[in-house]
Length: 114
Length: 185
Image (cartoon, rainbow over all chains, first blue to last red; front, side):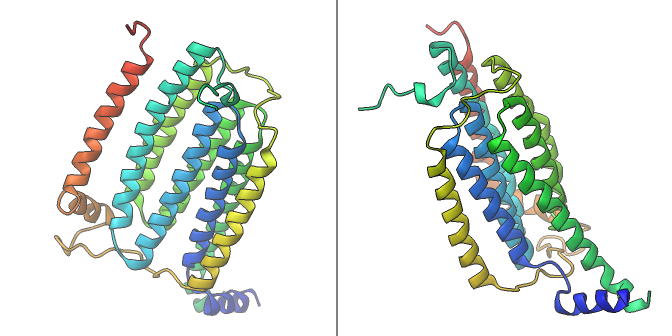
């Protein structure tokens, strides 16, 4: 009985679907977008950006696996390197904001607001 | 169990693993953007990164998975926690972490996931991944793994982008030091 079910499931779906990974990436991306738009703490915004970058990596690797092309992995590595650089500079900027304003609330950083 | 079921069990196991990891990723990611505690958000973010490693392994990208552990969990999260500590966030709950107009962000995110989900399902449908995700090595056809293919590709086709990334990392390092040092004058 179980064997038959497994066999039937395998007949219709004998492997992973590309869309599973793409939809996971899309969901993770949108959660990150929500975090960037709705958080007030600058460090939390940086964390949400990391979520977005990871969603992009899932997409790159999924398409790399689908088309049998290593370019997806290469650019996933580049994205990880750029994310490391971004976090380093971003946290330095957050540190300066904290030193000057004693707060990392992004609503307080409105010097350029007209 | 009969023999065909055993043959079919690997994709089923992969699917179970995928949905387990996907559930952890989505749940922990939602916790990252909704929790009222900054340190707890950082720990949830580590959970997200660690689960994404499983997804990378399913996609046969072993080297990227290991790099994810080293760079994200090892370096970026330590940096994040340093940032949290240096900006003296309260370790307990904080009431003002989320904007008053958070619903605009929620509406944007829901709209975006709807549009992208529709587009992806409409275009890709039930497209399958290949059973054996092994990428053919153009330089060395007998290469043992995707990792050797990856290194060949980086140091031949993508050598210049690779060097540019090194320059970028150096610039980011110098920039971060210049920005964060105290005796700027």
